Image 1 (cartoon, one colour):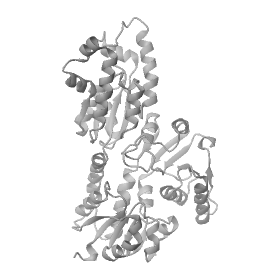
Image 2 (cartoon, rainbow, N blue to C red):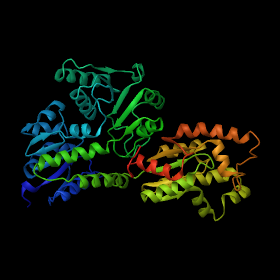
Image 3 (spheres, rainbow, N blue to C red):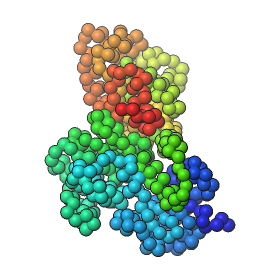
Image 4 (spheres, helix red, strand yellow):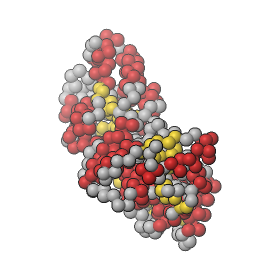
Length: 454
């Protein structure tokens, strides 16, 4: 039996997709610490019976949902941060700590003297509120679907930080001004429900119009729908991957205060962490846009940059049918083609791996295809290209089934109609008039797969 002083692990339920073993083994490796790190999945009905023996066997533990609060009654003591938050995510010899707070402050936006809006009032949002108050945010507003929960959080916040300007809100659009830093603390948008948003979509879009910076604590996917929507509007936004890494590093420093974690090694782990998330939580990056917007080119370049597999939906259709798209249109008509497109899009989305899917210009015009994508772990990237640039690239459009004489106004009408639909389905809207290599690098940076130099 392994000596307790060398035992580490994670308690929670369920833990099948946890990245904690990967992160902590990487961290211990660079510090020269050769200790095991185990997953300890405890069913809720067995928690009180099994947890005392776990505490007796393990020197250091991480704690995740649903036990961050429940474990407190079984511990000998708490540090001041864990006590204030009433939440424990790290344990050392039966003493509880909360390193989420440190992980967020090291990775999140500057909050000093700024107007903060927190979406959610659960455990994560509580940490965000206390972090903001602790660094003297200028104003803190908390929204939750459950008004009583946000009111209780504000009450606790005022007890610890008397005089702080903090209040709960029932309608985020009632807030005045355009200078809010938005902190998202709910699970909305978390894999595999990547279509999720904390508020109705029209409300989110209006709120983002009043937002100057956004931080989403969700890290899987690396860039959530909320983050991508904010970036599409030019808002500085990031997900919680840095916080995930930071809280793990802080836990290691509690367990091993004498260990040396070299900065270059830490940066390398952070770089690989995004790839690990994409592997553990597969999501399809679906490209849409008008003919000539560069979907195939950008998809290929992004695949080369990131190593992600690429599926060209039109090529998949041609391989399935053994003939070209033009031949399918000519022989069978558009209805037949669109049925093929829908069927094979579903096949591609069900691959179970992170991938890039490029679609034809008309694929996401069909409502059934948009609904299909929303039902899967997928994010839509709209390559928005101006019509003059499209005309320059495509010319007379040889082989384009829906191309018309560029002197007519039909192409303009088609472009306008489709652009509205592309915008409505897109999670990320990005200008495709720029150089393809630069565009591919920008999208790779969105998902943490390349350094963001913006």
